[in-house]
Image 1 (spheres, rainbow, N blue to C red):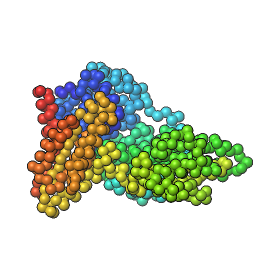
Image 2: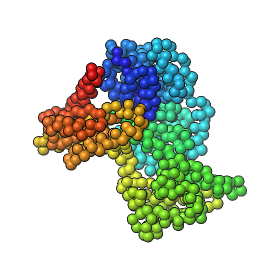
Image 3: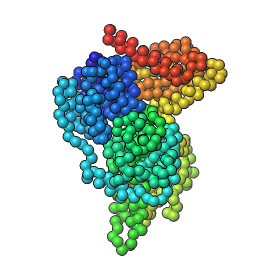
Image 4: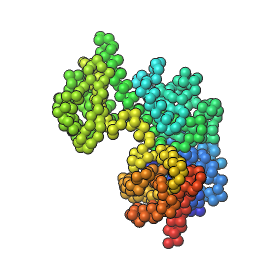
Length: 597
């Protein structure tokens, strides 16, 4: 058996820690970001000496991965350590530990020392020490539910239009029928916004908590993906699965800036759901932004209610109210200015300081006119813009403007001022958010369709475009080449020099491949360290020549490449399958040469 450790872990930071851990035990660490990638590694290298895996993996879940592994004759000696955040999945895995060949199960919240000691004992053939339970305590759950109640997020009115628009966009972006914004309450999950639900669930706006996939996300405080719920040992008997409503699920936690998990932003399909790690990262980012917005709006409503109470009741002072809101905006990534009654800047956050080049400690010393003139000087028309930049009237629902900043770099900014009452008068929150030349709706769409690291199209978008392009080439009677490039050793590079080094290498190669694709082709971040270039008009010979040229030009980067072209009436998916197979052969040949050399 090959003496290597396979780490199936979608999170790059945790993966780096596990890679360092197995290296300390004298094993080569090989990283797979999802279950399908882990299967491919085993096919190419044979079964590992050690498998460290989560149970909630994209594309192929951990239960399926372990079942598949145990069917291989060469995996009899593979030691398996499961590390997961989801308690009920861990309990079910322990019940199946003999069938799945699991030697130890740990909570994601287990200390690093516990994980290291467990790996050592498993490799040595010793029984691991029992781990300390790490489930949420009743006090933590009580505090979480109290926070939801205090924020007054559950109401009897119809879903808010803005949140309905959000879930509709998410469903469209992920090509699924159902998307939900849920709050997990004491005995049920409640849908704050929803699209695509059957009539009965839409009418009730919720289900029992025992049925809720989102319950696991909240308790685990992490994203959960269930690629095929109908075959999953924990979820296949769920009433929503039996009734054909949920066939697959992916959800990200709504974590407020204060750290409370309110619920989830999730997508559901009736069929198996194939999501990559980039898709889940986009879903997590959207959930984080939504949670921050819910927190901010809740604070504004709470202050408004305080002002509406009887004047005979004691109320907080104006300064105390402003100080509370000031603390809340510090955790926001959106540039925000808190303006006290009388148009006096009270505080800003780090995002505002970075965007405008204003020191935080100097903001309270400015007048509002000073502030808007500073912003105007960053635009192309300082004299004209300073007259437009203002706060909202106290009786309005807000002021919305768009302006173009020229310094320190060109960009479009949305200026939004929202008034809200506090004891002593009306304060305002002024937010400055970068548009990048698009509307907020388009910006959310971009997050789901553009890889944030490389700027290339995501696999979801790239695959759709590639299929369309191949169809066009067939109609025009011209060939279409496909080039796959896989960077080797990104995990080792990250481990030795930090994630910035790996990210920079990936970006550099992506820029070169993007140049190769123009004018008629395009590049895609396919998955992990693998990039794809579509080359309309290029036959197999020309595509292979380009691969060889890139190999010489990018000799400072260690990578494998595979070049194919569409053949006759071949199904485009078969073309992709041939490209993947060619890439796998190139990687296997490289490993063989390395071992014999």
